[in-house]
Image (tube, rainbow, N blue to C red; front, side, top):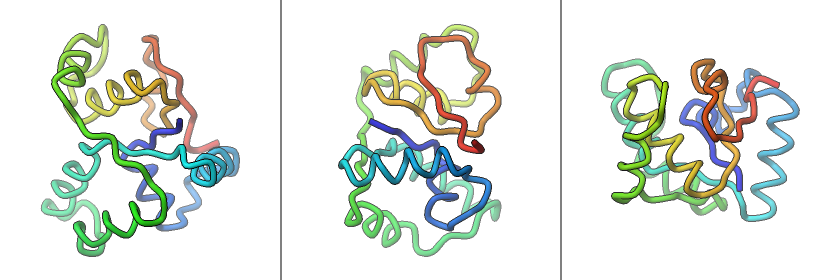
Length: 132
């Protein structure tokens, strides 16, 4: 399973060249194999970014439905995600990042991200650099 960090989802949908060719191929393969996912917290994060004018997206509810209809899986959060997110050692305090990492860990997924803090984290998480 491949889990997209929030920015990787936006880059993928927008055809952004910041998403590198290796990451793009892994994402495309995962989508074709029905193994591409996003955490529900990413939609909350995008809503917050949109409300603050930091990102421009179409209607978020409609966009989400379109993405899901194309095969993207949405992994809902539960109490276990919250507990794992709280227990990440030496991880920065951003709650959305913590929940995305916890989602990847609990789903045994590789996380596609360009977030240098996540990529540099030495915890038990398999990452793919989105820029590669």
